[in-house]
Length: 295
Image 1: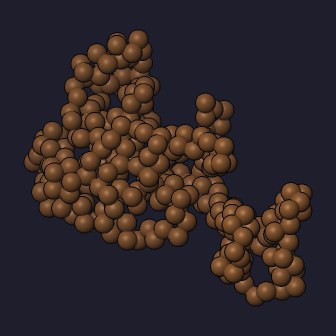
Image 2: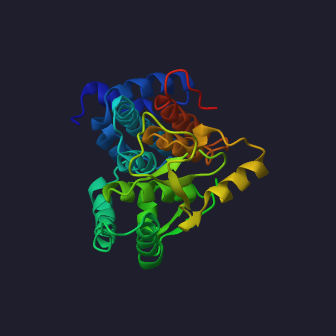
């Protein structure tokens, strides 16, 4: 962005020790939008003061977050949210310049590997065995339990890079690949788990039958392990949770993305980064249905 007199004046005021002055200056800088980022980056490079550099980094973060917030508002308004769009949007919180096309191409290669081995004559279990073998054995993807000490295990770009993600991230990617392959695997709302289920092809999403009668079996996205109805019923009894129908209905993609954001926010629970927790929770709140709580 061209340096006008006002921009030059604002840049000179960033190092003002008065908190109220900085708040006013930062509000005005953010109002310019991300086109002012090159000016801030140039100032950062020419500033030896680490405290001032920290202020500049915070301003750049706010500018990126402003754009990301707008992206999530668009997701909220969409009738049919693509899981990969949501995963890329979440990853851009930490990596704002993330190129989505290259990540999409990586998963397209995996989809093609799976598609070549699938056919209409395979049973539901045989289809999932093909997907599991290619995802976990051939491409070496590994799952892990959720750890709030490992925020990068929530990010799809790091999954592509390291082949390791937590159970939520792996589950969303697994479901996305199944969607591309027209295999009816969806996430379900089983308490304290991120579990996938293989639904009957004739399942009607808006007029579900009773409880889990539409589900052939369940899939653990951490490793592809198959669970039966009895396995899940035993788990629910151990948890003291009644087997209510809502546990066996497919989660909307918006709710899966919202759950990922909520859990990701819990990685930032220290004083120096708690603002990130608040920002991620505000993104999650955007995706909540009317009258729904994030708690």
